[in-house]
Image (tube, rainbow, N blue to C red; front, side, top):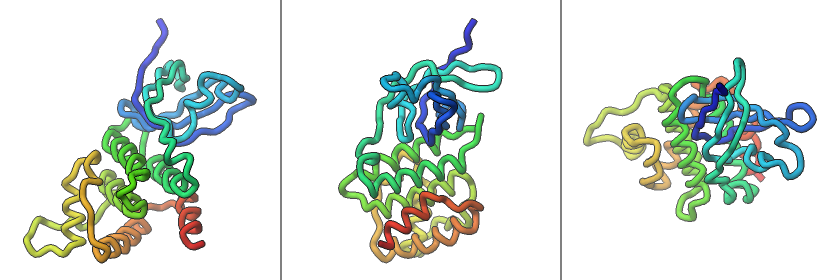
Amino acid sequence: MQNFMVVLGLVLKAEPIGEYDRRIVLLTREKGKITVFARGARRQNNRFLATTTPFCFGEFKLFAGQNSYSLSEANITNYFEEVRSDFELAFYGMYFLEMADYYARENTDEKQLLKLLYQSLKALSHPSLNRDFVKLIYEMKAIMINGEFPGVPERRDDLSGADMAIRHLWDMPAEKVYSFQVSEGVFQELTRRCDEIRKRVIDKEFKSLDMLNSLDAD
């Protein structure tokens, strides 16, 4: 009896394997981060050609072998075309994928991280949301989900604007993190704090973040 399973997930990265195959990394609701092989996915007109690229979100039917997963079917419900087709948004999106790949682990509960990633990619193309604000919230909430955000303020009436925002973000579920706004002064203070925390708790240089910062500097 063949061992098939269906997972809901988002493609974090893809790379060529052999002459025509592709290896993808999925962030899934059921299995955390997993590696999947898509046979023939790089052949022209192959049914997996478009469904095994970064940002693809949907259901993936997998064959679970002894040591690996192989893709059997894919039903993509969101390609995030708005992000992929915009040069600047794509840099933000790739950074979000790279950070999720850094934090996610196999066979662990990554539901909150998947929800955060999905909502953040949607938020990037929302006309009323500043993309740097989206980036800030994504970074802070991802660090919180991973249990590394230090010094979350207690609930008090005398909290500063930045402390109130941090407390609010801590309490909010991942799917609701873009339901509030902050003033420019609070945004600047949160950015400063988040940059310090990220550099302290994450022992990795993100290539996509370097590219994004280079883009902002031009």
